[in-house]
Image 1 (cartoon, one colour):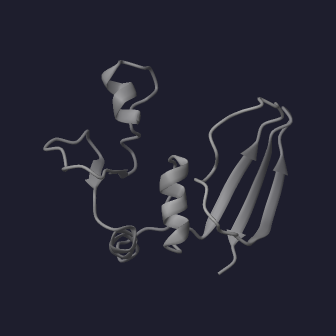
Image 2: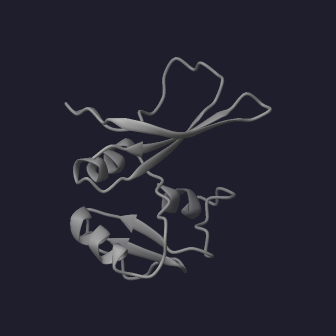
Image 3: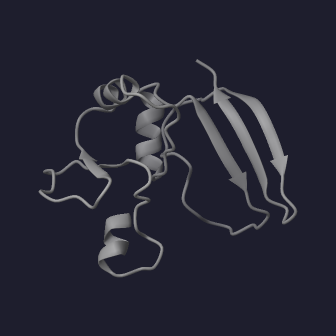
Length: 126
C-alpha cells in the first residue's frame, strides 16, 4: 500500500531510508526496489530466521491485519506497542485478521500522553 501511495505522490509516504524496509509480496518480486527496501516472498519463518541471524536488535513492524496475524501464527511476534487514541470512530481496520486464536499478553509498561493518547507495551506470552 505504501508503494501505491508513493506512486500517487502522497506526501510522507516514502520509506525511511535510515532503516532497512521489507515489503512482503505474494506475487513475483519486482526488479527494482526503492532505496533501503527489500521485497520478500519467502515464508515468515524463513524470513525471521534469516533476519535474527543478522546483527541488530529490534524489528519495528507495521502492516495490515493479515500480515500481523501471519507473524503471530508463526510465533514470530515478541511484543506489541499499541497506542490508544481517545476517539470512538465506530469502524476501522482490525489489528489482526479474524481467526480462532487467543493471544495471551503481559503488560510491560503503560504511558499516558498529555493529549490523552495511551501507549500500552505488551509482551506476547509464549
